[in-house]
Image 1 (tube, rainbow, N blue to C red):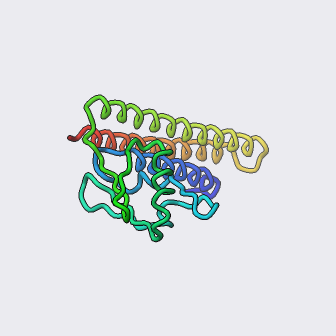
Image 2 (image 1 turned 135 degrees about the horizontal axis):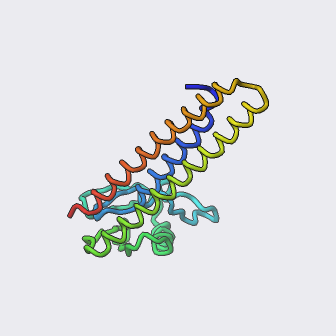
Image 3 (image 1 turned 90 degrees about the vertical axis):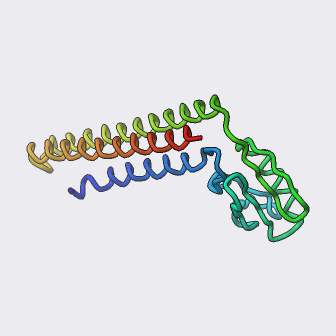
Length: 184
């Protein structure tokens, strides 16, 4: 492709990566340690990612175990999990914190599927905004004479193809995540 398209493709790629990270945070009834990615713990006055204060393991599909490296961090980790919006109450045995994932109800699965669809639509809007910015830029450089009119049209066509490709990727990711959520 053209180097003029590269910066727009990079932005589209970041949008897709962001969507994947958001999808990783949506639980599908199975224990997924990625739902803890955004949780930070007060570690000696500094907000520190949960992964940096303990070991996170998934011993079975319905449970995550967090083993803090320092026992006095248990209360802080519990507080951080309770303050987050993951919707699971932690239990501790004095050494480890357990997060037990209940089975999702049909209604909750549908709500999560709607949330996935909305996040997918937001990502598509972001991709289309990137396309609009790119096409405006290509029209400006064609008008200024930096590229010929035909090259300007080719850039616009390539931008549209790139946009279509990323929109299709988003649709596929939304479909896959929805299927994962609706599978009991």
